Amino acid sequence: MKKTTTLLAALAFTLLGSSLAQAEEEGLFESIFGRHKEITPVSNKTYQDECGSCHFAYPPGLLPSKSWEKLLTAQALPDHFGENAELDADTLKEIREYALANAADKSDRKRSRKIALATENIDAPLRITEVRYIKRKHHEIPEKMIKGNKDVKSLSYCDACHTQAKKGVFDADTVRIPNYPDWDDED
Ligand code: HEC
Ligand code: HEC
Image (cartoon, protein in one colour):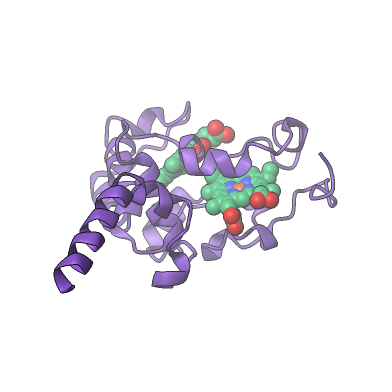
């Protein structure tokens, strides 16, 4: 009897195996493991100051470490999305270490786990907005509310719509799209 139960459990796990990662990305295990949902907010002042002057300082838990490894180098920063975001060696070292230690794949927060899973088997994305999980969450928002919206301009400006982005909170309940107060009712 015990043996049969063990065998059945093993079989169930084998069958589930292939879709476990997918199930986790879809959030099926949240209720079981009770993971804290939101992203860990930025806690390093140097990172906050240096990386928060042109756009809001993206919490490192929004990208896997392989992405931060590519973005945060002395070679990459002078040509950072068409801007010069160069840093002196000491500042770069501090920021890079902070980002790598707090990257999505180092976090147990639910959204970071989803980002880590969505990027596990692909080349490091250089943008958060390229990550499959993030793209899927926004694909229904019409362009007129993003690029065509003078108070948003691009999906990269998370905090234009996510009113609590600085606290790491991206819940749909806290979204407010500038100039489109009723975005939720439109098609
Ligand atoms: C001189 C201005 C400037 C500074 C300083 C700067 N950035 Fe950026 N960053 C940009 C621009 C411009 C973009 C592209 C925005 C767009 O496409 O609309 C960008 C995009 C990004 C993106 C991709 C966002 C997306 O679309 O998903 C990441 C990640 C990023 N920056 C991280 C950083 C980090 C980390 C630092 C600190 C080392 C930093 N940035 C400092 C100008 C800057
Ligand atoms: C134009 C406004 C806008 C911008 C800019 C924007 N978002 Fe969103 N985001 C939304 C809306 C609207 C939703 C909710 C979609 C829905 O109804 O499920 C959403 C949903 C999300 C969700 C899922 C929330 C949930 O509870 O399921 C995450 C995570 C998220 N956004 C992260 C980001 C990040 C990170 C950025 C910046 C790189 C960003 N968003 C930029 C409007 C925006």
